[in-house]
Amino acid sequence: MFPIQSVWFIRISLIYLLLGTSLGVVLMFNKAFAFSSEIWRLLPLHYSILIWGFFLQLIMGTAYWMFPKFLSENPRGAIWQVWFLFYSYNLGLILFLLTKFILPFESFALLGKFLIFLGLITFVKLAWARVISYNK
Image (cartoon, one colour):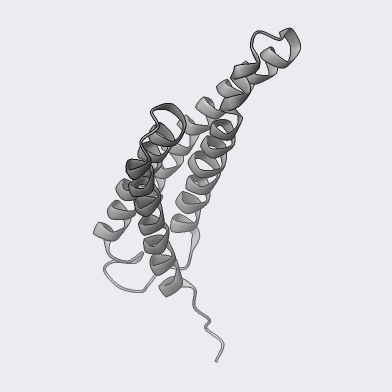
């Protein structure tokens, strides 16, 4: 069965895909019709949304679902850790994107990076325990 945590990771990643693609469309229209040269300042935001928002969350959601399961009552590990990963990563990403590119406030951008890092460490911890070999 597809875990609800994976469903939410993939849904949120698709929202970021729509945002990143929309921003890319705006950038390409500007390239074709030259509205303003200032719009190119949004290019790093476009990359960040697609890489950190879409791509990485799609990978985490799919990996959480597909990695081998434990033969226990919690086959994918502690549920609270996955929700912690989901909320810390997404809160950190939103905080980082807003404060780095839209409302410059460096200390909140640093907090956002820390929350993203905390989420990634939690993902590695969850995945590491499930990467096992049955061959000894």
